[in-house]
Length: 193
Length: 193
DNA sequence: CGGCAAAACCATACATCGCTCGGTTTTCAT
DNA sequence: ATGAAAACCGAGCGATGTATGGTTTTGCCG
Image 1 (cartoon, rainbow over the protein chains, first blue to last red):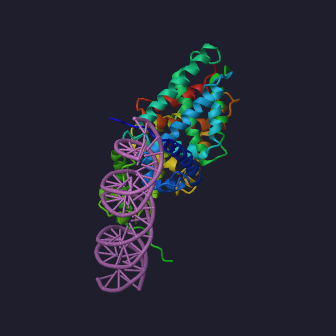
Image 2: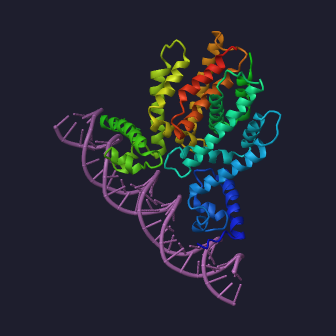
Image 3: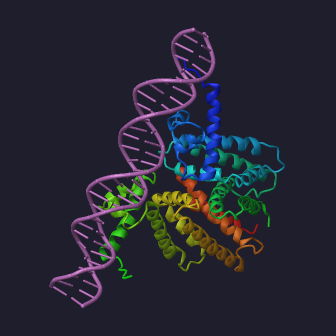
């Protein structure tokens, strides 16, 4: 009943774990990163780390959730001339944090399994993004920048899919420019030949 | 020096392993499938199975390589009125073998790590597909079906990316129609508004 | 045939993994 | 100051992928 919150030291440590874990993954790669290594990197035992995140998968999910918060706060909400520029900015930013991209790709793929603890998180995430991008397209249609005959929902899904799929291609061959390709897709959609 | 080939029994068993493994993965999911389970399913010990595939990852890579052979032989090479229809057919076929799609998504993502044994395989695979789809687009441009001003290579990459990304969305929400969305992207590219 | 090298296959063991359990130490509101 | 909860640990459990050193089976060659 008398539930007490986290101590100051606890919340700081939790934050330290999140940022340090991302560093370790970026350096060692997702596959070779174990809970023991992550615990060592922040000066904890494995059991000590698992006091904060009850499983490895929960820790990873939390890293990605934090990334989403930073991204939507820093890029998407800005008052840009063209709202889609915020989307491009996120993608450009991603190519500077390959460890995060790798982590995202790996976890989101694993979470396709309905039994995965982060399954619901990603289902919800994609639905949110579909909604946001769908209204973005509809706004551009209303503004006369996109042919109103086009299907906004399908276009939204295609953009999310292209962004995801380009990550795979970029990780396999970093000379692939993700933002450039997504911008070209936008050009394909907005062109009025 | 006197290297002898596989016995008849061996090649049959190898084939049985490939098909059975795919069944098991489709039923249990990629995450919950262990080498011991796969070995049991074909009546072998773990060591017996690893005589054919020196590692779990090599086995999975071999399943995907075989899938590619079947797909390109059965769909792409056909003399279709519109060659891109072969591409759509593969995607439609994929939605009937969710286990394979899950396996492909998982392994291709893991193989983004340069140290992964299947890394070179996937780098090569994507380069091949980029080439094939690029010439497909250029052919359509020559035939007057696609605006010759458009960048065939970028479009090819976008199609591969969309196909990959739609797999994630489809696995998270099977009501997403992958083939329909890719066909819509084709419509976006071929339209001459 | 018969022999014999290589393929097919197994029992066992090992290191590492994520995670649990029972405990001790540290924090901090009262 | 005190006591309850948070912070943290040592030890260990079950499962995993894989290496080792062997035995059995196959099928080419003389």
